[in-house]
Length: 381
Image 1: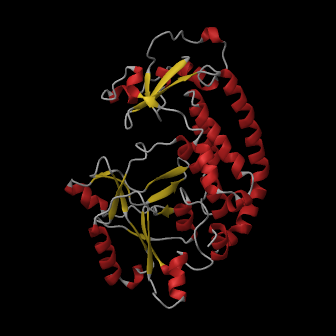
Image 2: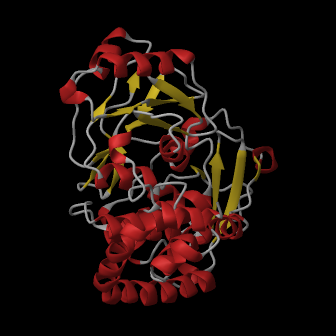
Image 3: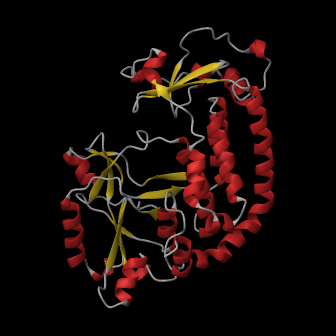
C-alpha cells in the first residue's frame, strides 16, 4: 500500500487498484486475467467494489472454502457467507454466482483487489499482518464486493496447517483488538466465544490452548501500546515455542486411515452431561470418581473435536491430526487446571471492569495506527 502511494506521488504510476495476496498460495494466470478484464468494463455503480477471490483447498482442489465471510452474531464468530461448494459440479458453480450477501461482510486477503479510493496516507491497515486485519479493513470501509467463478487461489486447509498459537492466541488477540478499535462488529459477544473455547480446551486437557487464550486477553488488556510498540515477530516466536508437541502417529499404534474413529461423537445422558460440564470433565471431582485408564491406547479424538461420551471422566485422552499423521497423549493435570482457573477469573474480572474504557482508548488512537507515518516508523522504512 505504501509503495503504491509512493509511485503515484513520484508520478511514476497511478494505480487504480491494489491486489493483496497471501505468499503461500497457488494461483492460475486466469484469475489475474479475469480480474483485469472485469475492472476494464465494470459498470460505474460497481466501480468502488472490492473484488474478493475465493479460497479453494490445496488438498481438495474442487472444494471452495470461502469467497466472502461475515461476522455472525448467532455464533459470535467469523464464518463463510456461502455453503461449501464443490466446484466440479455444474449446479454448485451456478449457485456460487447467486447473491448470498450478509451484513458485516469481509474479503480475505489471500486474494483481495481493492480500489485505491480506500487507500491513502491516513487509511492503511492495522499493524497485525496476520489474522483479522482484512476483517477490520473491510468493515471500516463498509466494503461492498464482487465475486465470480474463476477468480480464486488454492491454499492449504486450516486443519492441515493447524497451529495452537495461531488458533488460540493470535486470532483471539487480534480479534479482541479489531473488535475494540472498529466499533462495527455489532452485537458480537467475544466473551461467549472465549468461554466456549476456554472450557472446551480444559475438558480436552488442552492446557496449552487454554493458556494461549488467557495470553490473548492479557496482551489485549495492555492497551494499544502493545500492538504499536512491541516486536510482533518476536512475540509470535515466543508463543510458537510453547506449542503442544505432536509426535508421529505410529508411536501410538494408531492408523490415520481410520478417520471415522476420530470424528465419532458419543453423547451423554442429561445427568452425565451436566456433571461433565459442571466439573469440567472431572477436574472438580475426587480422583476415585474418575475412570481407571490403564489401557495402552485411550479413546481417539480429532485434534479440534470434543466428544463428551468418549472423554467422560477419563484421565488420559489421545488426540490425532490425521492431516499431518501426528498425535498427542494428554493427561489430566488438576494443578495446571487450578492455576488456569485462577488466572481466568482474574483476567475476566479485569476485562469486564476495564474494557469500556479500553475501547475508547483503542478507538482514539486508531487514526494514528492507520497512518503511513506510523507504518514507516514501525517498519523502519
